[in-house]
Amino acid sequence: MLDVITIVRAVYSGLSQRKVAATHGISRNTVSLYLRKARDQGWLTLKDLDAVDNTVVAQSLQQIAAPSRDATVKMPDFDSVHAELAKPNVTLKLLWEEYVEKCRQGNERFYMETQFRRYYHLHAKVHKATIRLEHKPALSLEVDWAGTALAFFDAESGGMSQASLFVAVLPCSGIIYVEPFRDEKRPSWIAGHVNAFQYLGGVPKTVVPDNLKSGVKRADFYEPDLNKTYQEMAAYYGTVILPARIRKPRDKASVENAVLISSRKIIAALRNVRIPSFPDLQQHVRRALEHVNSVPLTGKSESHWTSFLAEEKEFLLPLPESPYELAQWGKANVQMNCHIAYQRKFYSVPFEYLGEEVDVRATQATVEIFCQHRRIASHIRLWGKSDYATVAEHMPPGKLFFADWNRDRFLRWAEKIGACVCQQKTPPGCSSKMPPPPCSLCLMDGSRRSSFWRSSRANR
Image (cartoon, rainbow, N blue to C red):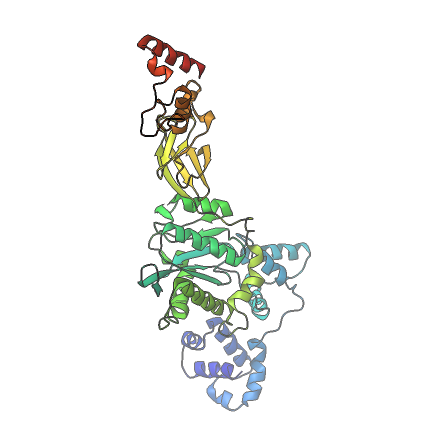
């Protein structure tokens, strides 16, 4: 209460109410209330205050400094208010309007919006709840690369190398996820998102990245052109990608702060540590991350992790049964043999799409072919010596006899005609150094040989 006496004395000494309010961090209306109460008691000058004991002054002004709640006014259910505020597009003003309408229907007195907000803040502070004004729980995950790299010894190159740090944060609880990667290419970018979802145990409703080329091909505020793999990953998890605007860091202010925290508490902490390998670097970063998320916040008993479990985890979307598998996209033209070429392997396509340009989606296990966003073929991905994956139904009806025209078929066909046609074998009883005897086909004249070929083709 000595602050209240100091405020009144400061005004009586000649300072303006505006300056006194700014000095003590209170509003001018509060200073006016203190002055009005002092004048009601007959304390109009400094001499009047000096003539009265400070204890008496403090007791007289105590009611203003710590006003009690009016018992005749219905107190809102702030537990319900806090739960409703977690829902999308719900604001304190909307909840106050609903509270007023309910009180009017019951002919009860109600608090005005200012007092409603004040008592909610007190409730949230006492119960250590997150004040949901700027960020809704599990609404967005902001992601970015940290600007500073981490050094480690790379056994593959035999020298020192640098790793980039992927950073993701949920703005409501402030929980951070970081992971080092050897580069900032698209596979690393996608893997960072997948691992962040696994770490959080759920998926946020939106993801807010920067306009980097790994995720956004063309930046636009209304219709950004996203990378196809990035968009496919978002669709798999049921989330939406909302890139930040160009040169608008406030669109992802939380991750900018998370990058600063990660740089100071993880990258700077490892500056003098000799890291012998990339797996060792991953372990160091993982331990540092757990310390950042579990340490109590300044002036509070809870941490980012406890706040996340209590306030935000239940609002995350569920994870799918299996993590997203990275897929590579490319383009190819359907060749005249009803196949497309992808990484020196050939996969068949229905003959109706001859000459068309198609999209190719390849994972480690499958190759899928799309035309105008519709899948037209799917194959097991070829590895090793196999070069062709052909489905007989993809071939034109009048050209099916070409489907099995390969080396093995021609050798089997040649063996049925004669040993000299199939030069792979020598007739029994003959030395390998001697040429094979002529077969019946070789002894035929020209007309009989042509007739033989025509009948052989007809029998096929």
